[in-house]
Amino acid sequence: MTFEPLLIAELLLLGLATGFLAGLLGIGGGMLMVPFITFILSQRGVAPDLSVKMAIATSMATIIFTSISSVRAHHKRGAVRWDLVRGLAPGIVLGGFISSLGVFALLKGSSLALFFAAFVLFSATQMFLDKKPAPTRQMPGTAGQLAAGGVIGFLSGLVGAGGGFVSVPFMTWCNIAMHSAVATSAALGLPIALANVTGYVISGANVPGLPAGSIGYIFMPALIVIAIASVLMAPLGVKAAHALPVRQLKRVFAMLLYVLAAYMLWKGLQG
Image (cartoon, rainbow, N blue to C red; front, side, top):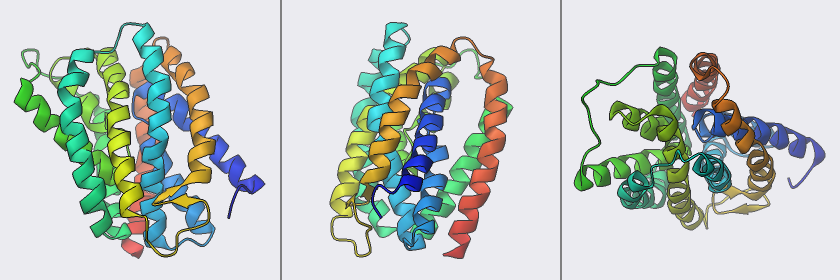
């Protein structure tokens, strides 16, 4: 299995969709990517347990590129809170290493699929309800941001997402404006991805049954095609975020997430 035409077409469509959503909603695209890459790999004979792990790892690797692309667009608009990036990033790196080097390698793919389904269901519900934070809450101090970063990095490593599913609600809960929270989450995607990808490459180095074109748990054909497509689309998503009714779009996207969560639940229960 290398760069066959049908595979390229499937990955290209997935990359265009996830790149646009990364810029529009600040979610990094992982919630969309993981179920589809799992399906694509499963259809090509990769073992169910391994296909889930590779989908999570490959999804995370693409975030390196989408984060760089979308954060540049957000930075031009002055929306990134770099003070929060500096406060949260150290904990994120530590949490990511613990997750990807240790826990991820030890857990079965079916367990990760069930965890992913639960996190998508929670994220979709939060997105659908569009809850507002209390007006007096503030961001915590240095120790609090270190701890929050650790949780974000650890959870991201288990599900292959850029952390926006935790960091955006957390920052808005602390009364950071939504556009700043989305932009800052995009900037945090880079340290999240770099820490976790390093762990996935090391922990998956000697795993049996990896398909051709893999480096550790990362499926390189998917990474290359999705990264190129998503980088092209992320700035368009950022532009759309400042022009479209994001609240209504979030509710539509939440409904799609319920369907994808059901698929990953089914994959997990199969295992």
